[in-house]
Image (cartoon, rainbow, N blue to C red; front, side):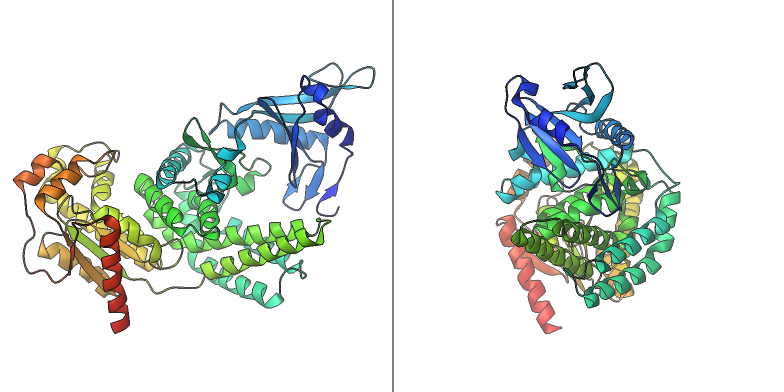
Length: 518
């Protein structure tokens, strides 16, 4: 069999689904992909899987298509139960005509879905600039919750699975010489194998620890939409468990890569840091660059493979150009960058976390800097949901010392993973400031500390306006403790009374000057 070869004639079924009479007189809209034909009619969508074979997908027989339809409905009901209505048969009646769930033997199987507004797909929203930071926060929360409940699969994943993906990617890319030069593929192969060699023990340890789960598998913007105002995941990878049962961070990496490719590193960084806040899964970050690279390489081979079946030469060349972009991105993800450590201190309400989020996307390699926030870390240590207030004993000196020690540990792990790190905490005590500086010194990376200061009345107003935030600081606390800074301050002082954007610009200016001086 050749990749993309049609194994059975589905023309009569496609004609039946395209006939308005099948849908009560409604003329359907048809959407074609490499693996399916989708017919939109009224408030329903009918997906017909193509009788096609690819190296990564086999729908060549009716039995396999039926199994894939059943799996698609079952698996996608994990995240979009209202959308997936069921699996229906197309049957042949005694007179030779076709019917939906009629008498006679099934000749095809369909996934039946509730139709939704295609303009609410996240890829379309991204194209018209309709995605907002709040969508990314909510999306990260949805993914974190889905991963938390996903079935653990220690029988799959790990370094062996990723090695197979890398070898398969390289082999398929090399088989498409009209799209890629051999030098670029060889560079990707070398960097991928080198990275896998370093990360193999971590990948296997994570599999044993339960981080390999039955994930979405195809988590990019085109498979996310707004349903009743909430980001909703759908159209997961249903045809191969070995591809869908992966490390949770590898699942997330597809989305981060997609956003990076679209020029939205700010959104990728926001999602990554929000996901880490929800899950506490900082220890898997050394593998994130390899995960991102593999996801981009997969897109490169898919685009290049699709170009070979395009009849229009212009469309074919456009897909090959896109494939080369993805190959370049896959390589860039694996090129090491020199990390550095930033610490942002200041009294509650000075805007530390907001500014950290603005500065992080522009620091280090994709998807930007990792943020370690003391408020979040304290909640993790206490086993408390982020938005739930902690009891007063969680703020005793002993717990505060544990919190700052864990912030330092996570910062060290991020630096060892090659990531630039922002440590976000009050840092009022000179010993706390010395400890975070020592992390950078021990790691041999540049350090820059910032102290944000703002008037008390402004800080009180900011705290009063917080909603669903990990910080437990209140107006009453600030009034009882108007100023906690102690000892000699050697960090760069930044006036934080202006807008968050202006404060972030001030920090960037200081960093640029420091980089020039170095």
